[in-house]
Length: 330
Image (cartoon, rainbow, N blue to C red; front, side):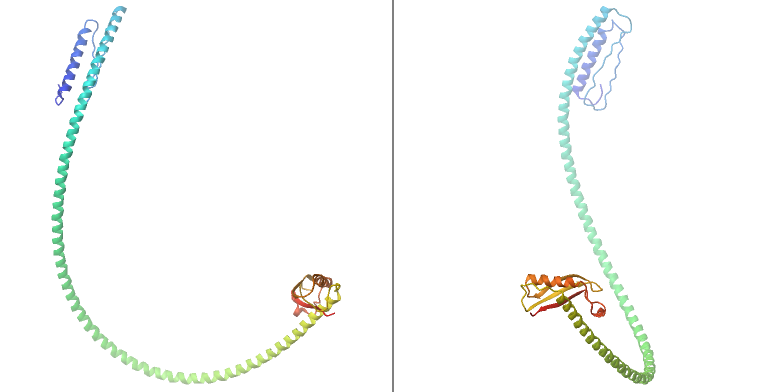
């Protein structure tokens, strides 16, 4: 028997061995029995592998003997199947018992692990508390050492500062003396240059004043000349503009066919669009206008009949769009 197996497993194995011995005894007279099978048990395996028996007839047999042997094999197989079913049921019961025992073992192991874990946590907490206490003590020791070191460094720094201040004060006094001497020299030099500069600037100011007076006189004369020329040009343009508009009104009046509905006192502004050369391309009545619709149409028709306004001689007052007033007094 394999050590470590339960009593139920041992009994099942014994039953199988008995069945195997019985089968060998029955077939010993008919054929050379060759038992081919392999029993393989892994350590602590829960299921027992089935036993396979192979009968091999190594010599010639008659047909009747073959049939008898076949019938006997079938009976043996049926008996073997029944035994296997019983063994399977036993194995299942054994597995259930083993599962229950395993569950109990796991529960016990879990409780034991929980107790161990609790002990580890308590021990870890104690170690952490001890480590924290040591850390605080170490931190306090380092703090005292750092305070002492800072105090010593502060003392040395103050001493160095005192020496540096004294040295800087001495150097500053020497530098101040040199600066004062340099300032006195610079003031004297600056005073000399200032007097020379004031004299030179006075000469330049006098010369510039004379030049400025002459320039202003020239500019004033030029401004008066330009103003006179501009006034003359404006007057000429105004006269030319009036002449241009009078010519346009006269041309329109000549080409106007007065409707019967027109009454004296008509006054309408007319916008005319023309191109360089005087050719008229559009004419519209704009406000103010007190004429009726027929009179308005007749006025724009008169403009379009003119066809072209004077251009030569009026280039300076020409505009692409012009507005003139058409009047009819009766």
